[in-house]
Length: 391
Length: 162
Image 1 (cartoon, rainbow over the protein chains, first blue to last red):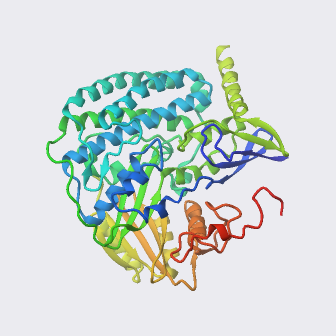
Image 2: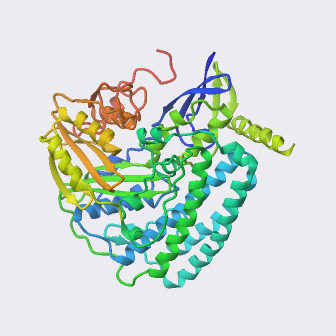
Image 3: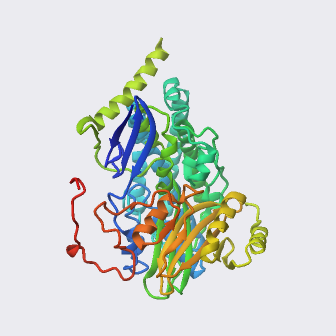
């Protein structure tokens, strides 16, 4: 018998306004319907009413976690219209912030994933070492979350040479801790059993659904804007693209963990080779034309298309966040797994989350599971696996 | 650096689709203009034969008509191809790509509700972002859209039975 388990309109556990309608047969999920748009803010329209320099301020507020990605892609798009590139020092600054943001975003996901499967130690641990990074952001840019570093034609702030040792100090700490996490998480048989072969997204599906970022790289589809279409300092540093073939949740976690190591490598090289000089070029006028900006955000490719008619505002500004493509792929990834796994699989693509936890599950009009129940279901399964391993 | 073979691909495109005009904007940015009837075949060729990935599509309300741009990326070479087509405003119809490319599903629904373009053959052309009570003939991203929320005749609330 088929039943419907609606999850939402807030995402289970991740508190994003999305609605998932799981169609289940007993415990097994056979289909999924996704409904989004509960929090449509009309950024593309608002952007058409603001001047060129005001738009980074607006697009920075699209996402609270990867708040560097959107303005980054936007300024790259506008620089593409004007046919300029930022001065070398600004390029390095933007690259450093982009990479530090990737670390903090991946750690956020890792902590939450640990929480979902009942490993609160992982959660506390990972966030313990994410916190100094936010302090570092405050030190460099005066803000923990909205960095406001991107500007058309350069960077708004310089990274002072006095701050280099602070960044180095954090990277040293992180390098050790990241190795510890990687070993601890990948060696734990219970975590492995819980994540392995769960929520498999095959390479064919990854291509058909055009997923990006760790979701695609975990499925064996190598697409990374930093390698494919290098911008700013990414072609001046040496790093590796992490790709795994399995496509399950564990592969996505591995991609994220190992990517943090690569980010550390990139930031180190940038700090070492940081050139002197101006941090911005003056842009007086935006000529008519169109431009495309792509940035590899922690979740995948952020894409901005901007069209100008020579006036002081964009005529059209198209924004695509990576989750737009990644969430749609859940339809195939969740099929065939149990409800207890669903919460984890739906979270595996790392949709942007914030705020409080709220899930209400209705069955035949009666409220049955809350967000806490969903967590409990997930924790129960981990407990079951754990007992099996203890024996 | 990635292997550069954008030239070969452009040559192949112009040979296979002579009606497509090419404009090279930068080293890795290309704009292609195709007539409306050819977009489906062209996109299918790029996706299935050449392994392009659909990034997103953009709909723009311009003076000449509704402009649809499909943004394709060629990850092997790192090049970006934008297929542009203009649809006359009195006949807003185009063949849907979602029949062979699931990635186009959501964005075509979005363009349909925001700009009123009909995608023929789309499996599920229901509104994506606007509320269930939003009138179907009101397209909020069009130039001629007037902000008259207060006068909207919303018949029923979402949770009420019809």
